Image (cartoon, rainbow, N blue to C red; front, side, top):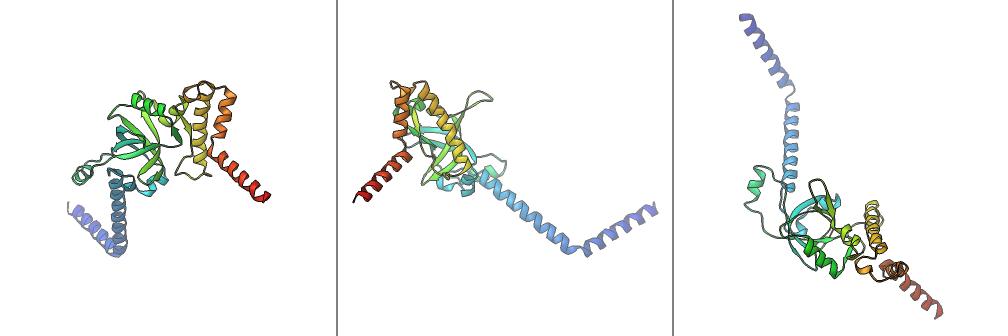
Length: 242
């Protein structure tokens, strides 16, 4: 029994000596753990913050194309008015609720020029307080440019941007907020163009009543980039003829 006590005391003494010899290391480790904890807490606070304005959303959220969720309140000509629902974490969320303000985010369907029939379709298909997911692509003043998704069953989701074009209820447009030469821009733009092409081929929505060649010609003539090139060519010809 005495030998065990002696061994324990000796072990405790050695541990104490090691701690004294490496005191600075222990202090540095403690400081590092404190910093790491603070970073985790800060990240948790941002992820659990309820955003009530587009300007509240951190820039890195937009740059990393973070996906957020919320409940739909209104469908307007300017976009969807959505109440953001943040991630819920015990303790942190309960504290934040005491000082969080109220407000709705204005969410626009990125890359889509909505037709009046598209507005009517959204009002018919979407229900008040319905849960929607919106992936951040860009921010323009007080509005967010997003891919908007709704759940269809347990495992399926529907991208409203694509579905609007697939039904012939709108036209493709420039995806505001993304760099025109970025890989993501063209990946999404091709998806939207394919959806629009399906409506063109099937003579749906705004493309009804025209031949396929007429619809393609009309689509090209209405393209903003093509119009800009035509304007430049016209200006160039007039400059040369002077």
